[in-house]
Length: 316
Length: 273
Image (tube, rainbow over all chains, first blue to last red; front, side, top):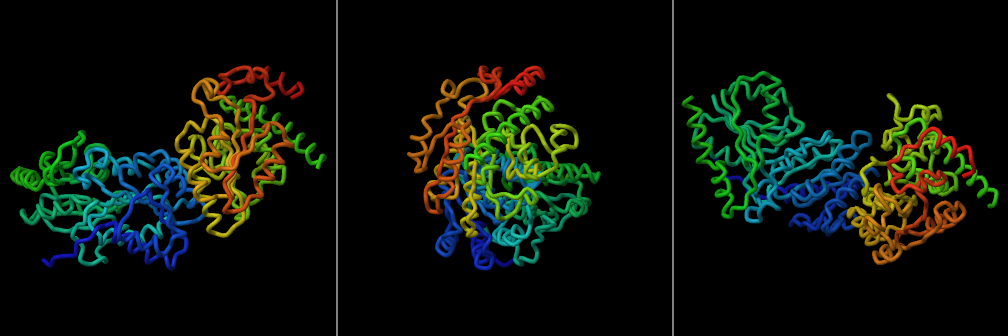
């Protein structure tokens, strides 16, 4: 297997978006005092379409919605828990509700999903966003696993009408996709490893962990979900149909509306015979310190715990 | 000019009566906070201040009006019907099945720009619109009608700061300063005055008028609308009376949630305002 380039999702996305800004004068980029190396280019090349609203996420969303009502395509960028939860009611009213009547093209980018801001504690961890953003009607929700998917989201968000939320990991991660053509955003997922009996359905950072598990246990399948809303549900049902066990893996609270709830809906509506096993954070904030692997280990989300689960299920 | 003012005053009287009629048809509407804003909306729509087109509500050449105090704008329904946004027969259906005229107006009503009802959003959204118009090189103005109680919401002040920083001279906020929140007078619940000192400290131009004096409103808004991009945003503090013209409302600090009886409405509309 060739070693693929490591890069942050934000730099891949923002770099591609900056390229598009030369041909598309409708694009605005708004931030709540958050930077990125690739963002320096936008600031330098398009100072009249780059706005830092300051540390004010509620106003970030309100200003973005006003620009969108004037026909602009607006990208907003802030730390994930703050852009989703500090500004949740602004998002609900001025993006989700409003877009049902008038076009509102605002793409929210939340940086630092899951526990990728490892030692920053519960305020900077973001374990609720996938569920609460999926909950909002008219809102699309993306959680890329690498920078290749992140870059593909630029053109997808430009041509898709309505509000969107993208969760980016805070850390640079190696590419999982060698070819951008393998990323079908409309479909919403890609099978990264074939298998039988057991399938890991993972999103974001956890797809890297899922692939490591599959390497240790050949025959365990891996599906990477990068669009949690919408996705091709019929295709996902077909993909899941062969397995006896489906293990969902997300850096999020489980049993409350995230990836596991999406899979539950598919299993129920398509009457699949598989059993579901959710992996993620279980209704408790994380104050413990240490590496990301350590935080995962103490929450039974590391490779050792997941391999043990697959071994146990394999014997069933 | 005097004739214009006379016409505006007659229009305001009609809007006031129609607002009470709307409340009679739909008792769940917030009548008291709508009555304090009658002259404000009348001046905007009939005083040649707000560029608009009733037959094309999203006409690009329009000025934008954001009704931040959504609940308190039932008085705008008869105005929009009269200005051609929809048929006057729609007024009879207010809050009924199949109608688009709800107790809290939304963008499903032709003429409304934003989703309303959740307070504290108006100025921030208006900032985005004003910035968008500036970027498009359009000379149009953005007006916001806000309630004084709304300024308890921190998000309003985030917008106030933004507008001054970006020198949005194409933005004018009108505060319907009726001095009452839901449960009591603002000064007893949470002090929002003095608006002049607060807004001036943020870098805004300020002006205060009697919000029931059509002439004063018209003069002030005409002046404020003449500002250029690059100048400060402006606020007009319009001192008003909640429940204006209805003694039962004017004397009740809980009038925000009060529903008038048919007898009270008849008594008010039968007498002089």
